[in-house]
Picture (cartoon, rainbow, N blue to C red):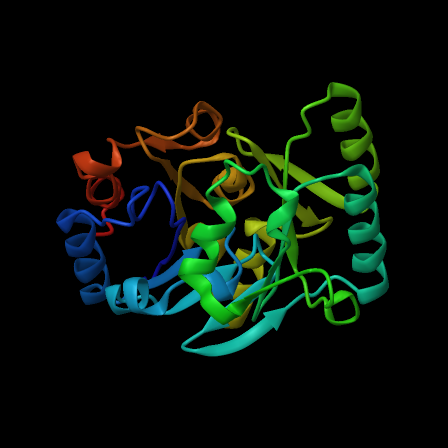
Length: 263
């Protein structure tokens, strides 16, 4: 029976330098030989998922933006965008409170570099990766095609509480660790994206598998019939996964696939 297998990118498929173990490549090759469906399942929006580094591995489609976008065999099947007026109100609030943030869309990322600390390399790094596909928020307020966003934590505790209280009215906050939180429209996550894909393909829930390593994978790991957390992933992911594999560079994906007989 053909299975549908969903993989997070960062910390699961590749490391912080975007390097992929040979054993992971081999696992994907063997799964394709078995005829299984392979999907990327990422918090990144589609514009921030590099085709050249990932799609040749054999993926049939992409679930992006924490369930706000679904693609199969190069064809867009679903894309949710935050209504413009709602996004404008959210943007006004983020500006007023003094937050540093990046708005993530299907085709563009929006960021005002001056909102980030001077020592931050994040804005320049994004600009290097995306070029003209990263634009300023300022000047584009009437054309904000956004699916989700990320916000740096506020330095002052009271400001952080104010930020979360307002954001939680319309969005789900994912605390990723580090210096930022991920923000997704309510009703969307990796699990809802998987449901859409399985409906399109006619794949039964019992034939779904997922691999992840962090807090934005929790819905996916809890939803699929079988789930694998990376050995070097966050403890929250290990706590909800059915199986904990070895570390990324200790053949984690290969061993997880072997455990479930996918290869």
